[in-house]
Image (cartoon, rainbow, N blue to C red; front, top):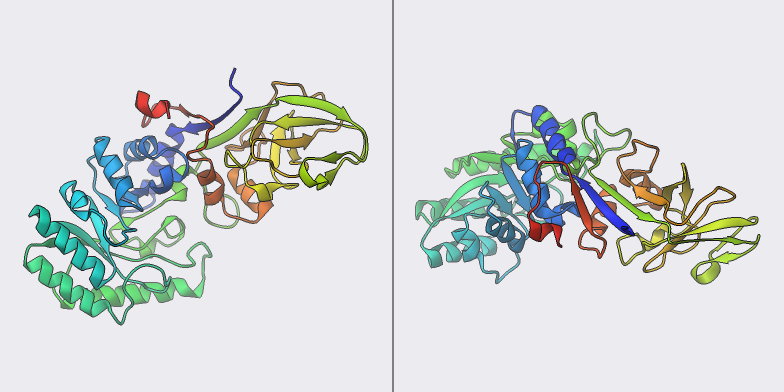
Length: 382
């Protein structure tokens, strides 16, 4: 009998991507970085491609090379590239690489020359997030250098891109401002003879709310896993793909006034039944879900009683007939009344991205349901 597990509905990922594809005339890049937001990078990528995505997006070069070694041949972009990486391996594997500064562009050119083939490059313009990418002041120099490298056949500028700061707040004044900076940056690139096939700025939130930002390619991340980055009810057609659950390991009756878990941050209000659930912060449960995290058990939503421990937490179940072996669902699709990852995020003051991503790489096994993107035996043994 299983003790705890993370279940991933691959068909939900496929269908979420199909929904996103139906809502745009642009191509769709499914973002599968951070081990597919905790869902498993390879099976999530395969399911996304089955749903109609034509691109894959990752943060690191290692992530991109892992996808290539697994046999995925679709176009893919890797964008978080520190200095000194073996970029030539990415060039050889036909991984598109980001360049948001002259120094990054120089490294990509050197990598291309090392393997004697043009690199596929996306130039990033910082339109207002103030994170990665070239500032507007430095943009003309970057574009000019890229145009020269393209003429020298050291690279092909496949894309120009940027990233929104506040698209998860529809109507925020920065959205239009960033789109204007992006349009100006594209015009500058055109003046230098750089007219890439792909222009992209829309993340999940903009994919859902700003069709005028879609250009040639959109980059949904959390939305492909069925979670919304937006306030309010989730958009129609998106279904959460991850369920986290465990079986009750022990129950006990305790008197009123009993302190529970480390530090006795919770005390029972009356004689009650406590249920021990074998999941903790070592598995991905946020420690700041102490006295707050909602859990479905015995037909009701309960909240973690006391502090989350490394391997376990406790629920106060009152007089309900909870038994060892009963299934406690931390979050899922919400079909049967169980909390969702968004409910968890709201309860503890974070975002649903963090909730699901925490469970990636934990000691709790991931079990895959559905037929889309069925993992290899090696993946199921992870």
